[in-house]
Image 1 (tube, rainbow, N blue to C red):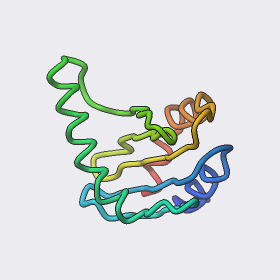
Image 2: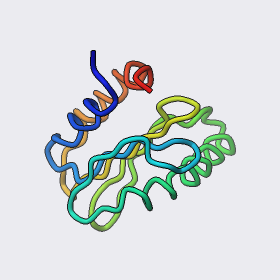
Image 3: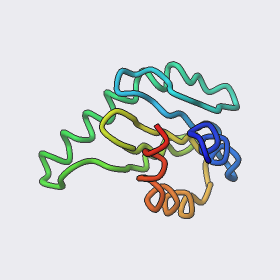
Image 4: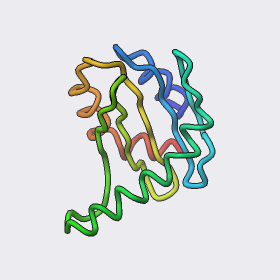
Length: 117
């Protein structure tokens, strides 16, 4: 049977991925795989606040519950997602990485991934 560690490792092997961090709502990393100098602890600590603000934005705009976002930065993308009420996910990818398949897989397997926690 797959574990959350197996999922994190598989995601981290995707082309252009620098980091995969599964985060508790308390801001502590549950599991992670990082490269290229990414600090998993700092990313994990910041993520719940980002998700909270994204949820507020969705509420204010009448969009409903927040599930997933792709954020673009000067040095790459961040895919942030709510796995379930107590767990979050962030995947940091390099610039010009095609994230279409990754987004499809996250949407398709969100419940299965959440079930591993």
